[in-house]
Length: 371
Image 1: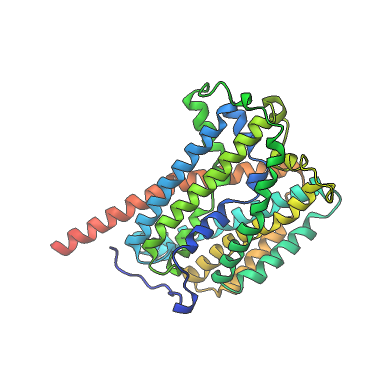
Image 2 (image 1 turned 180 degrees about the vertical axis):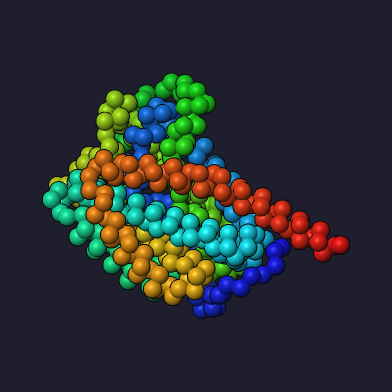
């Protein structure tokens, strides 16, 4: 266990029961990606795309195990761990990186959701108008603390759950033979499909910041793994359903496959169910945005002694200004690709690196104490 470093610990009244880590992870991972990830994965691994999703989920389980190894030894959050392992200067630079990292994830979620709204509902609406509405809404929740944000995650999960049942309408028109032949693609193709899942699986890293807010933190690990299993199951069911509903040529040309499936829903009282689905999906997207902005502003508060509310305002202003630079579908695709690449190397390389660096640091300290 590493020596404690000074960071402001949350008060008892702000702590959460361990099982809330389930809602934190699910709230961070289930977002806009569910609405259109299928086409990208199928491009690499075809009808075996579900294998890529399962492999991506297994990888995240390993990364969550590494995160908890880091957090249990670190006696604090990411800021305290960085300072203990790398010192104040290098640790400060790494903290600055993660502020930008979480802010970038939040920006990508917001901008992608706006792109969907423009494509399916309000074609002529200005990007900055929706962006401002979303960040102001997120600000109102984040300023009330993590407990409120996690409460929003709980509401979002239960409100959006009925949308999964809506996929039954598409299942009645499915062609299961689209899944065959199974295991036809090479390991390289499956791995490339798993890598393409990166953007959809990001967000669990929020645990690095939220961990001190969990009562008896180590006991929350099982709930975090259950959350990863749940999100993997949701993504797997989504990719299987779209694979058996569309043929591969159709799926390769369908940008938002899940939304297209909603168009199949035929209810006598609702003409365009996808409008209802996209409106309800705000309750899924908003918790993700809030968690990421909370994490970024919390790091700024702990690392640089900036009031969290002030840091949040600065981040929102910066993101709002950036909203004027991503204006079309092509730019949104480039933004998603860039965020996925940054996220991939962050979780695949930095998390194991931090795990090893922390163990080495502990070994050095232990050796010095013996002498």
